[in-house]
Image 1 (spheres, rainbow, N blue to C red):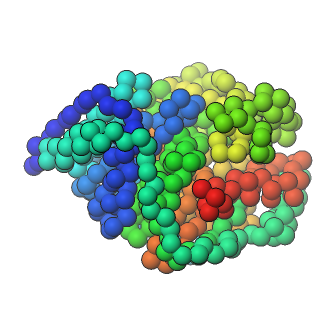
Image 2: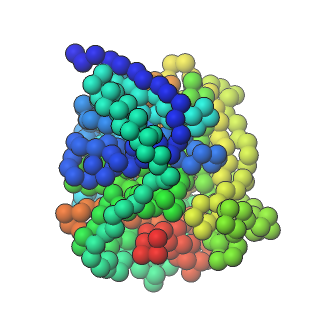
Length: 443
């Protein structure tokens, strides 16, 4: 058995990010090399602990037969954090919703690593743990990078070739027609909020997923900024939304609902936004109702696994800026029951209510009928599981899946439909959420 080892030191965050960048470039050379990475924006309301997993020692690739107990055995049955994703389609199986759509993406994929590195932005301390040889390798890399004084992650490679235009699974007319169908179902009482999405597919000879990831981190960072290699596929997730965090048994969910697109000149170079624009978002009756319904759904989703009377809502209708969007969110908190673990909570609440609708089961069945694509990674979750009562996870929106062999990049976007939604406005909101992937040439 390999000798376990731990190493900690105080380090400039830029050195940690430079190590992540170096390993991401290496992992694009083949499965099993390099590392999987989760970066985050310090000070963001949904900021998470930056994470690097290097040297795969075990993995669980989900199938339709993978049970929650198998997921628990993998995560808790051996030392060290598990990192990876659970797809939206696995959530459909958990909810008993059948689909005949072909799946070209794994239902889930979790890994364990020879060494992991985690950075504490509050203290500036990086902790590397795992097998002695792998830990020593990362320690030596960090020492070298610290001497090189990295100013920032350098995205020194560019995708080659000409990127084609995006093909939408639901172009404008079809998307607006589906919104009208959703409104009819809302008026009939079948559902009262529903998240409707479209898939964008870009054909891109010479696609460089690692360069794309690093360039986006440089220009459009986000609190759950993940790189993950799954076979020939590379996940580039720039999600702003936390699904569920459990820390010492304390539970936090931060559902996002409510979007306002910012035009040029409506935010300063330091990211500041006119308070009047924030007031326009928080004062919208439509956006308020979207958020309030989802907050109530999340409260219900976590209550069964939390101690009675511990679930509460705070910071309701808070606002943050990500990319060129203002987003509204709330904090939903609770305390995990002593007889439950973080994966009980995660799998019982999965997928997140902000990307399904209310009631959840009805909304998911309607989504399956209305959307011609499978969601796969989109609206699933990237997650780090550190222990039975220690986990953090995202809602995998603003996420792309790159297949360099097929020279394709898929990404998705959607909007929340309520009774007073306007089909044209919902389509425009959907395109605004996909903007960072649609305008890559400008980065």
